[in-house]
Length: 204
Length: 204
Image (cartoon, rainbow over all chains, first blue to last red; front, side, top):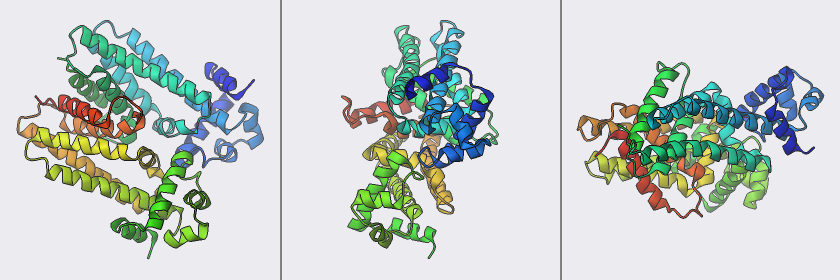
């Protein structure tokens, strides 16, 4: 079984407690030192494991990164589909639901988000291509909602695809500046970004 | 002279041809492997220098990164101030000028932009604090234009600060997805983002 299948397999399954500990430790050290600046030994040490115990769970450092990235994007896709399925038929409600998921998901684990953004370059093929394809799927859910809104005359923007991409970027980007010590809550941020996104697509 | 003064000094001066070569080489290897995954030897090799020749120009790898980051943000601030000074008094023209600079600057060197976003964490103090202060200055120029637009009744948004931050994030983020091979030109992207930004602040 090659690495790609391995990471794929693990991304389908629930992680064992040992795997969870390793993945959390890897996010912590890689967020600080980057993928290439982090060794398997660093991850094992942070997790309180020996390097050989880590190799019991993961084939390599690349396998650890691939598992982090694949799980992240799968959870995001699942949360987004679930939110969309529960949002009813109104494009305003649908876009609001997408904005909420996109922001809250990326604020759940800001270090993990930073890693997800900066270390795609460190993913090896075929995992990298698969990851980027899933990101495009995520973008397409936004695209479809904005396009439907325009078709129904609910949104008036003449730039639906550009607006849709900008909305994903600005919602994901909240994780780059939001401080949990801020006086503004996550929920307030979500409400404000729902308003901004609706203004950008020309909703009432 | 400590490192911080060194980087500060160099950021004021024009780089020598040797320094330029080293900085360009550093951006190329760090964009691929990250700051912590790159050695002085890697940078020197990419630049076609010996490591000792590199140390003739820079004190350390941290000094190279600090110089890249400080020059980048200084150039961005200067370009932004220049664009704003030439944009006249209308908030619509001013915001359009800011959007144009923010996008074109970050598209000029997409690898450098990625580095600027992902390696702020690798900057040591006091350079890091100084860099973040300059980024806040950049954000404040957008904030002031949007606020003035609202005061003058030209922009109708009830969320000027949030809109201003979202505009900076979405314009900077163009560098994360734009392809020079795309059928859409940089100038078309700028025009479309000017429209999106104006829609978000509620301009006519």
